[in-house]
Amino acid sequence: MKFKYLFGPVPSRRLGLSLGVDLVPYKVCSFDCVYCECGRTTRHTIERKEYVPSSEVLEELKLFMENPVPFQYVTFSGYGEPLLNSAFGGIASWIKDNIERPLALLTNSSLLVYPEVRREASLCDVVLPSLDAATQSVFKRINRPCCGISVKDIVEALRCFKREYPKVKMALEILFVKGINDGDGELKALKDAVEYIEPDEVHLNTVDRPPADDVEPVSRDFLREVAAFIGGRCVVVGEAQGRAVLEEERLKEAVLSVVKRRPLRVEDMSRLLGSDIRLISKLIALLEKEGLLVCEVFEGQRFYRAVEVR
Ligand code: SF4
Image (cartoon, rainbow, N blue to C red; front, side):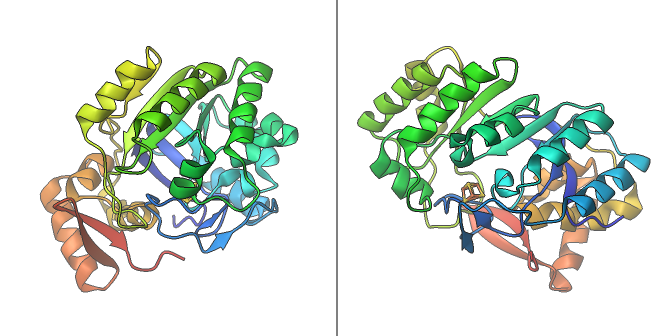
């Protein structure tokens, strides 16, 4: 079955095997992060509307559930910011009523400044908001937000969310980019913000796939030092553990589906799809020959990306 709005299940480094639900078209986002693995934002907006029809998303979810492969979470994520879709609340409610898996949301946090959006986000069991900077100047450099978005308001909104909906688990993500948000002043501001927000967990991450701009990751040692500096709630994000068991005839479609979302290495795809690495390598060579995949080298590693992503 070829889906337009669902992808995976894919192994999320933070959630295990995750069925992705994508609620906005390619790169509709309120941010244009320098590290974005989906490329540059093409529609930079803070306007909420039904960017993709909720009826079609629900139809796909019903079809998927008729013959599901193993997965642990349903996760809103994908090409842009999920909360920009004004039908988010209705879709989240349907999933909670019809799919017996925890519901997760990856968000850049920008829309959480609105109380009604916080209420919709609270339908999820786990919310994983990003906060890569705590000062406006670094926020603008790393996330390139739509004008008018203030990181101070976002920090306040995250604190409100945690207090308004204490039962929703909040795992804050901070992604570090070398030379941008790794200075002492920013680290202190981030530590203060974390103490103010009081999330359940803080996930520390860095660039590990080809980014939108020519930026570099920080080291693992740096992330460990930051974890010690910020304190007990911090986890350094590791490798994905999940494993999907897919039938062989679905493998080609599955490879294309996962690399449409983000660039992956052969070993990632092998682990992700639960398939032999030699079979995946052979399949990738065929897909490259057909012009459906391209290879990009980042930090000495070969990543594959789908050519047609729209
Ligand atoms: S990383 Fe997320 S928030 Fe940033 S530009 Fe990409 S999709 Fe938008």
